[in-house]
Picture 1 (cartoon, rainbow, N blue to C red):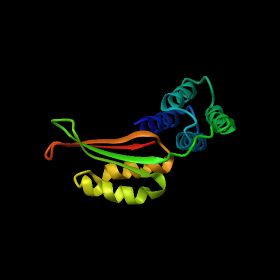
Picture 2: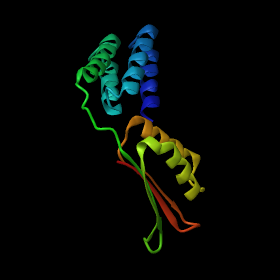
Picture 3: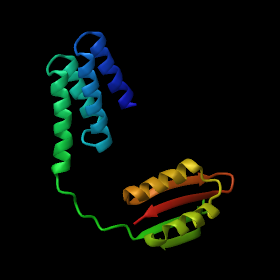
Picture 4: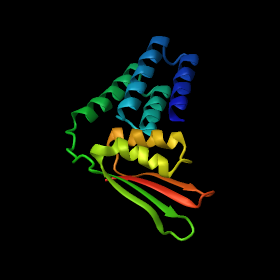
Length: 161
């Protein structure tokens, strides 16, 4: 996991005397903000940390660089995407590929759709349903779940379009 690697690198810099504890705290805060906002990828964050570790930039400079990436992302105009209109659930037979269920539900009725989908796929793990709920909340489009139930010979796919 990138965040653990980042934290370890910051702790290593403190242990080696490259940065102070307060510098580490500021840097960890900036890293967390960059991760939460998605301003910088894990690779970009690690590169910035390695620059600080190698002495190319200070911990304060690294924190400022992460903050600048965060600011650059928030300054970009958000693309106005049309909201998703359909929640689709498709259940197919694994051996024949024949569709058993194909339900298209308007997004305005998605809670009903989630309950219906749970009835058709009782073996779908709660983790998968949590991922579906999260994708809906975040406005993700496309296939958000593809689960195969080998025991019943069914594949459940959920799309947001």
